[in-house]
Every structure is written in structure tokens, then in C-alpha cells.
Length: 217
Image (cartoon, rainbow, N blue to C red; front, side):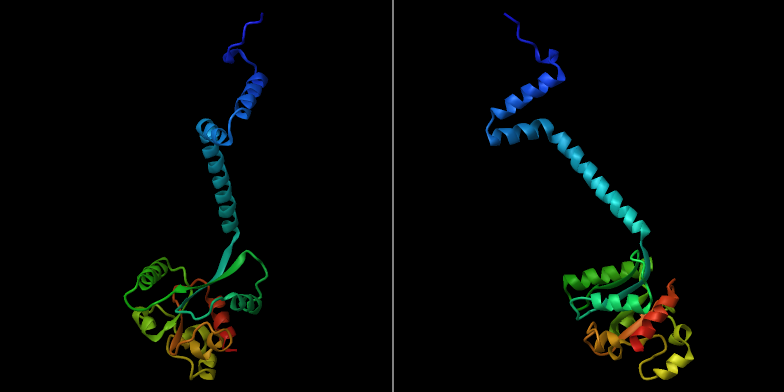
């Protein structure tokens, strides 16, 4: 009679067959418990590899993207900015899908609520990091940040001819958004005294100028 082999003496194929038989004899609940007990680190590694792969792909894609303009709109009344974004891309003749325009309407101001606190913190980060090019907000919020030359002179950005042509819609360093396409065509600002300011630190001055021209054409 042949002596039963010790498990350590089995070939890889025999071990695999033994494993299959063992698992096949278990209930579904026992199979899950068994698999998790003996293969949890395999699962952890697999999940980590997948997550790393997804992160790597997204990181690579983001490297390919070039932000041409970043617009922050406070207290927006529009559910979507997709139409504005698409029309802006056409107006600025942007065809490369990796060249993007960001229109951020997630900032809301009010009194004494968590949303206002979060928005204030976000604006502080935006100002500190200098990631936004254009700021659209109410008169009071504009006045809060309008100091030390933070906004470009409209005449410096757009020229004297534009200022003369739009004299009723232009201030020293702002334009009235509620008299532009933002309100009239896209419904993105629904309040009076909505100001458009272009940050003096912007590295996208030409695109900012084109944005303003588009709004007031």
C-alpha cells in the first residue's frame, strides 16, 4: 500500500488539485471566510496595484492638460456652466481637448453657515495660490478683496476704446457682470451689482481679455 504523501512533498499541480477539492467541499460562507483568511494580502496587493495604476493614469492625463483660463464665480444661480464653457472655447478658438477652461461656481457667501465658512477658506486658498484669473462676485465681496492692486485696471487690460464704448458698464478695475452675457444669456449671475475683476497676477492676460470681449460683444 502506497504511503500518503506529506503536503510538503506534493508537486505544485497536486497542491492546486488538493486546494480545489478542499474549497469545493466547503459551504459558500466557509469558502469566503477561507479565501479572505488565506488570500487577504493578495487582495490588498491587487487593490493597491489597481489604485496605483488609476492614480498613475490620472496623473499622466493631468500632466497633459493646460489650463488656459480659471474663472471663479461667487453665488452663481446657474445649475450648469457647460454652455458657457463650450461657447468660450469656440470664441477663443480652442480645439485641443487638453487645453481647458475652468469655471468654478462652487463658492457661496452668506451669513453664519458652514457653506460660507468653507467658501471663505476656499477663496483664501485661491488667492494665496494665485490659481484664478478672473473673479465674478457681488459688490461687497469685491470690495473685501479689492486692495493693494489685486485687480487689473480695465483700461490697462482692455484699452481706452473698450472703456469708452462700455462706459456705463466699466469701473476703474471692474466690469458689471449683470450687464453682460453672464446674466443676460447664460443666467449665471442673478443678482445686481455683480462685478467682474481680473487678477493682476494672471499669467493668462490675453485669454482674460478675450473672455471679457466675448461677454460684452
